[in-house]
Length: 124
Image (cartoon, rainbow, N blue to C red; front, side, top):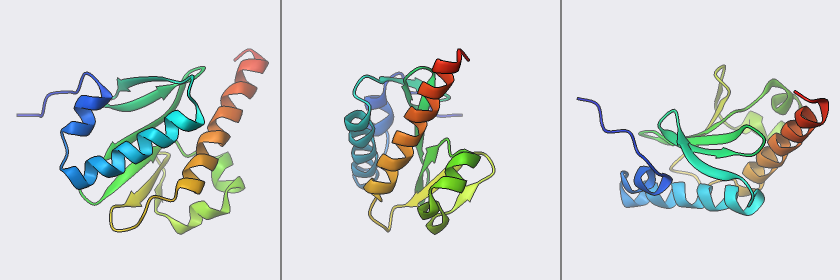
């Protein structure tokens, strides 16, 4: 039987062990600090932040937290991404055995905000 889908980010975070919760809360806090006007919700059964469309998501896994989306443009523009495992599905993995790279995460969020504002300006 599948686990029930969370109805809030608090429910999502609280469904994990305390050490994972710390990771998730720090990631959550960072997103909220960088884009305080973003709406926090659950989509695809994971925490999602909406700002002129779906901005960023994250999800906890057994050995890492995944952060979405990582675009081709990001990979070409943010060299620090090469230090982490990424996938063709637009995700970067942050292992639990390393501190969260908050400067990199802030840069990725800022990149996504710029992408969204540029799309909005084009009328997309």
